[in-house]
Every structure is written in C-alpha cells, then in structure tokens.
View 1 (cartoon, rainbow over the protein chains, first blue to last red):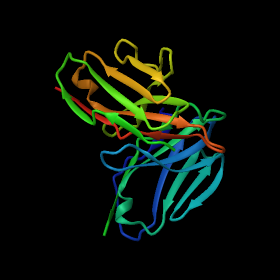
View 2 (cartoon, rainbow over the protein chains, first blue to last red; view 1 turned 90 degrees about the horizontal axis):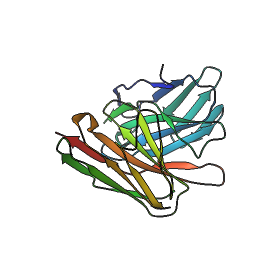
View 3 (tube, rainbow over the protein chains, first blue to last red; view 1 turned 180 degrees about the horizontal axis):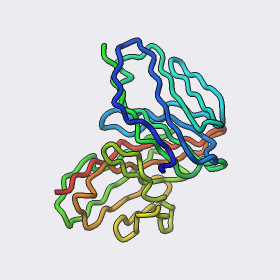
View 4 (spheres, each protein chain N blue to C red; view 1 turned 180 degrees about the vertical axis):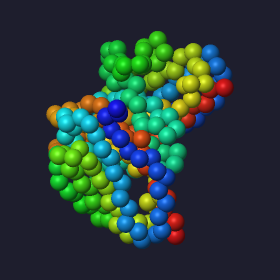
Length: 113
Length: 116
C-alpha cells in the first residue's frame, strides 16, 4: 500500500464550479499536509500547507485535514480556467519539515469556460 | 521562497550515454533534493544532496547510476548514467529554506529527459 493515495482523475468542471480534491494516507506520523499546484511543463508550486488537523482558508482555496480518518481535502470555490493544472498533495512527518515529502500521484483538473 | 533554475530544460539522449542536470538556486538553501516524476506517477525522491559530502540515496537508487554533487549551498548536479529508456522521466530539483513558522520546499521547473 502506498503511503499517500490520490485519485489521478482527470477531473473536468465548468467555470464557477466548486472543486473537491482529496488524498488519503496511511502513516499516522504525518503532521504537515501540503497542496502543490503544477502547471503543464512547470515545477510544482506550494499552494497551501496545514499543520495537524483543521481547516485553512486562503482566498478561493480551503484545505481540510482530518487526521482521525487520515484524509485531506482541497476545495476550490468559483473555479477559473486558470485553475486548470495538476494538484498534488504532499505530507511530511512530525518534526521533519526539513526532510522529504511524500507525494500523491496528483489530480489533473480542467476548468472549462 | 527562492527561485530554482535547471539546465537543460529537456533533452533526448541515446541509450548507454550519460546526462548531467544542473540545479541553481538564487539564494542559499538548507536542503536540496532530487526527485523523479514519471507520467501518471507521484514524485519519487531519488536522493538528498548534501553540501560537501556524499548524497543520501533512497531505496532503489544508487550512486553509480545517479551520482550527485553539491559543492555549495546554491548549486547541485544530478547525473543519469548509462541511460536506458526506463530513465525517461522528468527530473526535478528542490530546495528548502528555513522560515519562521514553516520550512517551504520549492521546486525547479524540471528537466524532461527522453532516452531512445
């Protein structure tokens, strides 16, 4: 079993839709949870990070972490064509933000006008 | 954060040859890593590039195949040796800068390698 599971999609939604992206994980030692956005032929860029459980909001983006279920989500409100990209969840272990990240496979999202 | 550049951005190579990928950061970083990203797969960590010493390799990756150098805090190279078509992938360099509340890991644009 992979440590981080993410449905690769593809996911295609109309502009203005609410998008829900999800990952599950198996390692209870994960403490930091990140979402990266990767445009075609670019490197991943950090979108949001969350420490431990709870919600975090940044503009149209909301990240949720449910450690009891080992489940994290990213919600995109009022989605735009510019949100079309691959979204990767990533995690790191407790006390180890200077170490390796464990990534999901990424979900490819297309927002059509 | 900081900006990472990689050279080359892409290359097509023949089986049995080697390619060295360069990674340059515009400021000093604490940690540098090399990842591989194959189509439809998650990013896989190849190794941690240690400044002034041998890299630390992940399971399944060896120094003879992927020699890495990191002579200073802003530069690293990854060589893909004796290439085969299975090495066709995107290779990404990343760095970590220590922050006040969070140590962000940021990535270069990647090197797209095709081995024929």
